[in-house]
Length: 431
Image (cartoon, rainbow, N blue to C red; front, side, top):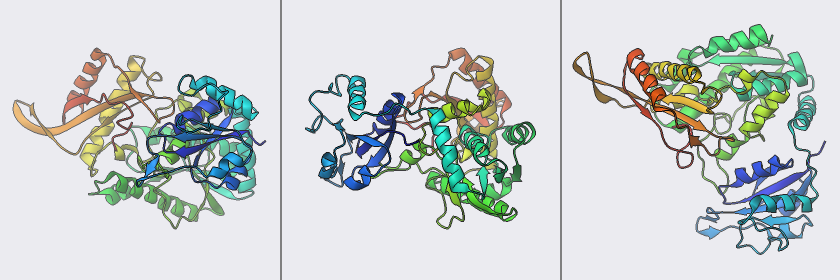
């Protein structure tokens, strides 16, 4: 089924994702396109019924103000300009600045858009598309056990069944107990065709001495692909690689008018000589939509609402060049944080919480002598789509208990700090 689609043309706004989500919240599919897309190319997009021209603070690129092709306004498709300096905002619609929700709703009505964007329709469409793409071929999926890869696995199982082989790679950058949990849930409980690969030394050796966050992400992404290539060679007929790429991954990896926030291991970190055709059925979904998709697929709540975890894992929480001692500090402190949040009922109420260990030491006192040990930084944030985030106001008594436990139970650290920075200006992760 062809969904009605409202295109957002990116003229340098930081609110593209927010507007796309607002359109989808009203039951209409929306997608972000570059400002310089050719009019006829835009007109050929399946289901397009409206265009939002979204100007913003990054409209000047290399000293030149950018604009859309004037032919956009002659396509016979309704246009709404969110930037009020443009004369194309229809005079009879509510003004965006005074009432954006009313303006958006009125514009959707004018477009004649069918409000049929929901997870049931999305799943049905994706299963049909996956079956056409895959045919009788076999698919290899990186199954971390996180929300994104779990939902991809569920979609692929519905679409192609035992043509799917899931590979769980323990790269040494997972949280405490996660490799064991992934094997237990997916192989033992869900009966998935699961291959477990212990690649801890391989990854940590590759990452030794690498401090730059972008290099770390690219090394981890490239090494993942190499592992999958090796596993695929052990199997017959593997031609496709399933990936849990989601829309914020693509947006944050950079556009023509927005600088890259960070490259994602499954967007910017893939090697040019990739040997697989990609399957990315979630690449146009925001994080909350991925969870809704998982619920609609019948996945259990403890899987759907599992703590978000970056593809590079603890590699971007052990700041700078990764060392095994700091990696263990991050892992053990994170386990304490998660346990204490669960004990006070914050599990499932706070969107994401984790620990970070920087690559410097601070002075302290241990056993009545001066010591130089690492600080541990706590982070707890709330968000809907991972594009913006607010800090959770954790009760002081909870922070004190977490601090006492980390300092007493985790060797090598002597300070605990709480990160109070929202996104933006900060990002959710530190690297």
